[in-house]
Image (cartoon, rainbow, N blue to C red; front, top):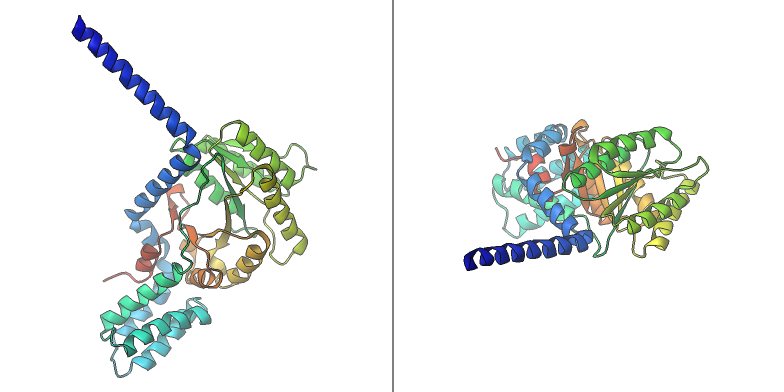
Length: 353
């Protein structure tokens, strides 16, 4: 009898402990759960290099001549080779400034005697590009607050892949038990709200849309964050209308959306991500400058990388603005939106034979 009582007491103690743990996880989900899931997604991506490799095939093919160039490498003719390398990087949309920075790093190591062989120069090239991608010192992980909800504001020009990226993020986090709220802030395009509704259903997320054609996007986002705070939502992802970076009026409206979110929840949005279409090449640099000036970006998402040979352009954007890349899109499926890892990206561009 005493043995049975002990077993019952032990069972009850375990139940209480489990309950307390559940309560603690729930209370800290705003940061702890989301940060943990971010690590899980990153670790999963690290074991799925095939997607990045496949998704960068066109850019890699364009850079393939680099290996041919190194095959003729001699230390005596290194300066001529470096000048040709700089030209090759520029043709792959690295941009003159960034290409020069990458090559100068190699040149410095040659002069100091650290680089002597063709393998040395190839290794130093890859490390130099990684160094540029990490020069900001900012994390490529999404940064979340201690309190719920975490709020993401997604911006970019028309056709860049904003809504699709939002849907993929919602699916990734929603499938792991995160309570997600999507905000259809693109009030100018009815199809955007319909597309987002499809993603909300697919990812079991809630959706807030404009209740009337006259509702302003900044007002909608204020109400959405207010509801999220009441409903104990973990993650709010706000879509916005695509706009040309040269349209001052529309860009100011975007700034209003950000201010409106901050009025309801000080410190929010916690991430302002710019979606960049990889097929636009160095044109994305001007876009990034203007959006950053208007809404102070915290990170970049590079989409459609699988459809372009101009993926090197994003290195120039990072170099210019000192902003981290958070995700890259290398295909159409949900799993093809990958957390960005500089080393994996550069390895995909210059794979070891």
